[in-house]
Length: 210
Image (cartoon, rainbow, N blue to C red):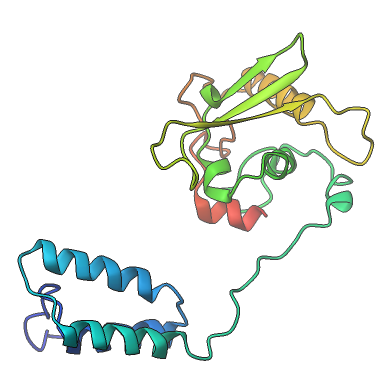
């Protein structure tokens, strides 16, 4: 199919383009239009264009229209943790291009309160162990509460005495021992939850595993 004409430029932002983009957000059921509208306004001003009262007026009513009747945010499905503990610790991935040792991957992500993107991109250098205190520390390169990207670490001690919880320390130790005995690299930048091909786990594959 031939193009009907040149595409509409992103800048300058116009009231018409605000309405057009807003209609796409509304049609897709997205609730983040206000954030994108603010980013568009900033780019418009930084490019030397004037942001008028009509721009603001249009942005406000379009934002209301996009969010009207959208309902509460979709909640992710929850795990029944005690049933998760009963799953065999199979080395095989549970999803296409998923991580090996998927159950360990999931249990450790839960213990450290990690999102799928944080768990899937972690590297071997992110873990450190204090074998005398029986503690494992997971260093995260950044988070929503770490806007300076200085790094956030979380530590778990051995909790083998708690029968209703998986012990993060021993889970991590067992996983690292398995990884070191495998054919996969274990350098500081190597993925700690590799796929069968030894590559990094994608966010999509992490979600599919969960």
